[in-house]
Image (cartoon, rainbow, N blue to C red; front, top):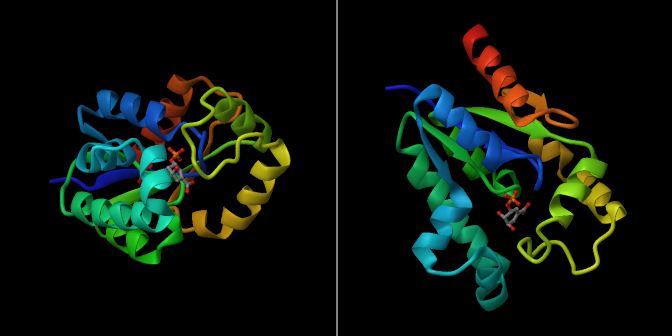
Length: 170
Ligand code: S3P
């Protein structure tokens, strides 16, 4: 049984779209943590935040990190804040390779602006400065990754290829 491949990184860095393609290339199962939390709670992530608050979301996220790290051979797309809890990182690392996807604030802003309203941590009229501020606050948390891959200005398939090459080298 092989280790999981765990994609971490800020919102809008491409964890879900790249994860899905990577899993297909590797013939592995793809799991998106936020979608799993939505299935279990019966609520969208934004409804979960709105009705029960971030604390409840983080506790669902923690349970999900633990549950998924007990499985193998998965490509897991995490939510951008999974790294804020060191227990999550510990369990995900026990049975996984952590790959952090990165992107410029400008690209993140452009990508998350397309799906306004789905990311409860971003206020309605967020600006690129808000993204920059959050990126700065989060930077140290993402440094737990085994590998970092920059996705800015790259085609999804090129990023998948880059990850494949990293995995072969190791
Ligand atoms: C969050 C990122 C979101 C989602 C939730 C919290 C965060 O996932 O888990 O809104 O704290 O950065 P994406 O990274 O897929 O947007």
